[in-house]
Every structure is written in structure tokens, then in C-alpha cells.
Image (tube, rainbow, N blue to C red; front, top):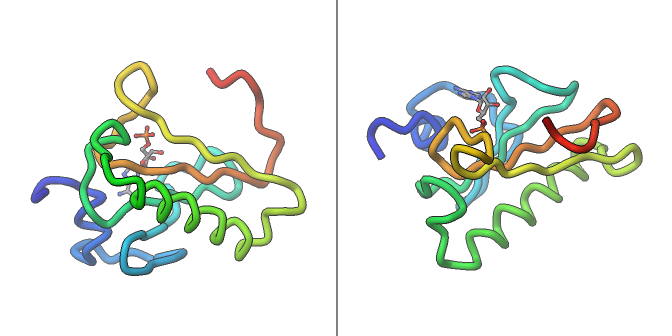
Length: 112
Ligand code: AMP
């Protein structure tokens, strides 16, 4: 997707300090962090949202990478939250599937 900001980040077209990168997944800090730790984990392949994913390995790669990143960042002791906003009412603003990894403060529930 030529006009997708997360595709540009994933493919190195925008200089980015990656928290994690492998063949399938990239992770980088959110521009507008909502917690002391706020990492976005994305598939390198473009999916407008989770609704577009038909291959379960995409979910497996995304989730296993997010768990690995949480471990590498030392988040397991105090805990963390993973969020995938999907569609308009789900609060999704960037149309490329992404998982928010949030940590470093007490996170409220229910979400706003
Ligand atoms: P969502 O509202 O779930 O679609 O989340 C999109 C997230 O992407 C927001 O938290 C934004 O702050 C973040 N974001 C948008 N553009 C960038 C960017 N260029 N680099 C890092 N994070 C971004």
C-alpha cells in the first residue's frame, strides 16, 4: 500500500528506531504514547485491520512477537496490556493492523 504510513515504516521508507523486527513483524514506539511504555506491533504485510486477516499465522506471528517484546522489555513483573482497535467504533485511526503494547502505569478499566 503506497500511501500507508505503517507500510512505509515497516519497509524502511521512514527512518524508525525499531524495538523489534523480523521477517513478518515490526515494532516501534507510538508517536503519541498513552503510557510510559507504548509500542506498536504490526505485521509487515498490509492488512487494513484484523477483519482482513484470513491466515491464522498472521495472528500467531503478531501475538507471539508481542509477548516476546513484553518479555524483552521486562514488562512481565508489573504487567502490561495488549489492545487491537478495530474499525470506527473500535477507535482505529490507522488502517494497517496494529497491536498496542501498553505498560508502566496502572491502566484503567473499562476503556473509554
Ligand atoms: P489506533 O487509534 O488504534 O489506530 O492507533 C494508531 C496509533 O498510531 C496511535 O496511537 C498513533 O499515535 C500512532 N501513530 C500514528 N502515526 C504514527 C507514526 N508515524 N509513528 C508512530 N506511531 C504513530
